[in-house]
Structures are given as structure tokens and as C-alpha cells.
Length: 201
Image 1 (cartoon, one colour):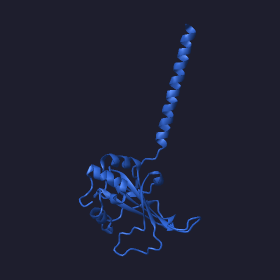
Image 2 (cartoon, one colour):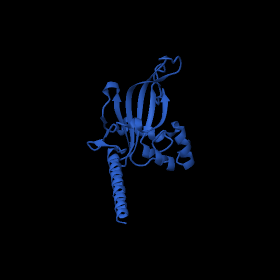
Image 3 (cartoon, helix red, strand yellow):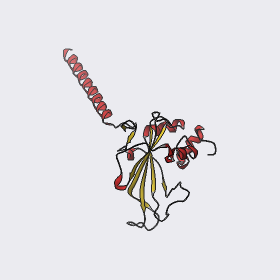
Image 4 (cartoon, one colour):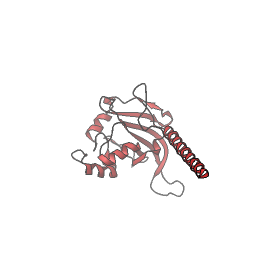
């Protein structure tokens, strides 16, 4: 009987050790995961998310230009849009963007006739990065950031002034809140289902 009792005690000790070790690994993993929330310096300067390419890829546009006189069409750039995963999941449930949502718009050059490709265009070098953040800390609730172009790309960016045009454009022309969901077909379906689309869309 004593042998059985000792064996049971040993098994219980091993099980407890395994549980503790598992908890320690989980805690270590949780600490190692970078936060999705926007991070700032000097109170409002956004730090460019280093891992945004691991976020949810929403859509890509080629040669899109919102200006009345579009640029040259012989060398259009790709615009890739990413959003932080937790905000994406929330949008899929509600059709709304939660506070601290961060979008990254990445511009890449386009090229053609590379390798075995003889037609169409594919993405090439990074040429610019911008961001849009929904954050109640800003007076308007949203802020827009430009990290620059090419070799001048910066790690941080100050919020663009209201008269830069971003706020007005994203207020008048977007399908859901301040975001161009009309260009993201899978999300537009969700917004229609949740009835969060602005009139006219």
C-alpha cells in the first residue's frame, strides 16, 4: 500500500510540475507577443508597426489615385492595406472598428516582364508607408500619418494636420466610418449585413 501511495504522490508531483511549466511557457509567450495597440512617442507621434505585414491583409489596389488629375499610368504603384488582427475580428462581428484600430497602407512599385512573366504587373520595391488610426485620444477620434517615401522612410510620424485633406476626404467619401470599405469587398459585405454602411453605398 505504501508503494502505491508513493507512486501516486510521485505522479501528482510530476503532473503539477508539468502544469507549472506549461503556465510559465504560456506567460513567456504572452510577454513576447508585441501589442497591437498603437504606440506613440511625444504623446502623439505614431511608431511605425514593425510587424504590420503579419497583420490581416485587407486588399490591394493598382494605380489608385484620388486626385482630380491622376498621375502617369505607365508606372502605377500598388497600395496594400493591412489592419491589426483584433480590430479585424471585431469588425467581422459588428461591422464597426473598435478604438485603437490601426491601418497601414503600404505603397510598392509595380513592374512587368520579369522572370517568366510577359504581361500584367507585379509588386516590386517598397516606396512608401502611411497609417490611419482610430484613437479616442485625438480630438477627431481619428488620425493620419505619413512615414515618408523610399530611403526617407521614418520610424515615427506626427499626425497630419486637419487641413492636409485626409480628414475631409475620409469623412465625405468613405463607406464605413472613416475607412474606404467600399474598396474591400469582403468587408463591404459584412458592413451591409450589419447595416453600418453610410447612405449611398
